[in-house]
Image (cartoon, rainbow, N blue to C red; front, side, top):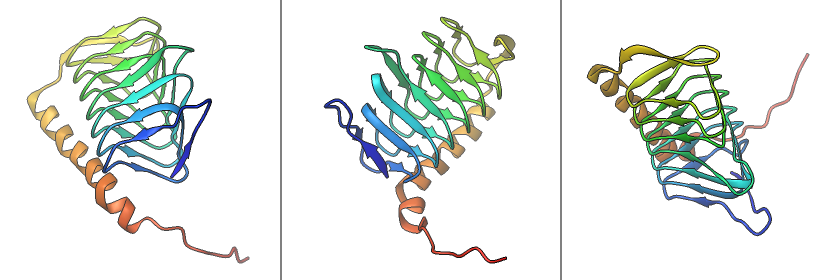
Length: 181
């Protein structure tokens, strides 16, 4: 894993968590237990602090950053989809940020809320608990997350905990290869 001390801050990585060696975790960062940080993720605690809860999934090529002296929070069992950007915001427990979505300064994505793929949650906007936000800028749909949806996502979240705790540490290895024309 690529974990960097910065300005006297050393990231804290909880037990059973996995940070891919092509991801970067820098400075004032705390990662909970059984969290999966995928290839290419950038978690940069240089200006502000980043806090990520237990069992979260930070997928490929995500960027997480905070303003000077402030905190970006990702709750326990939250899923941050491929290529998402979180900046100086709060994503609560079990929330889902879709692929390529942006959650901007001081926005709050409440428990079990969903931000759809490619959506942009603007400064200070709040996505209510168990609701879905879509579009640019994001707007709330008049749809509540169902119990079946939650059950499916709990299954997927368990898959990522298994990836972090066993499968990646045990089987992910760089292999030598040579390009041949």
